[in-house]
Amino acid sequence: MKSAVILNIFEEAIRTYYGINEIFAPMPSPYPSGSIEALLFQKNWIDNKQWNLEDVVRDRQTPAEKGIQFKWEIDSCNQLRTDTVEELDDIFFKEFSSIHPLENAFINTETPAWAIDRLSILSIKIYHMSQKVELEKDQRILQKSMSKLEVLKQQRVDLSLAIDQLFENIRSGRCIIKTYKQMKMYNDPDFNPFLRETS
Image (tube, rainbow, N blue to C red):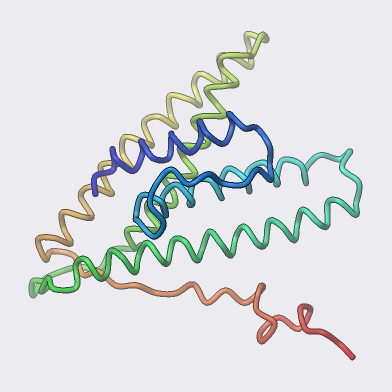
């Protein structure tokens, strides 16, 4: 899968999410359930939801009780985000499982899906910075925002190329594809005593 296709799905998710403009809006299903496109759309939708939840939590006017509830929701989003990324990596691992790595093959510092995770967040950053540029009236802040937007766009170009190169290196056997689960502990009652019910 090319990074350009992935970016198009992320941008579609962003347009849809902010078209509804409600943090807890149910996610529509524009792609067949279980497809890689559906997972990519879900990945970006989760990121948009978490972005907005974190903004609300940072608002000093948010009541403490509501802030705690939102923090729990952020934890849930984080877990779903991780699960979605790992599901994507499972698909990639299966797709490339028949490829025999070359003798001098290298291991990348991150899996394809975790690189795609960064691209999803970057797409959301570009959306919000573009909004800032469009609406900002203060010239000093506008210039600062425009400068940041240019950097973000260059990061998108570079990261997109890196993802395409990673897939090509895996296909050619130059890179070994491995999957490692995140082993998150904070959402697991077996590892986080604060989540265990006490009698």
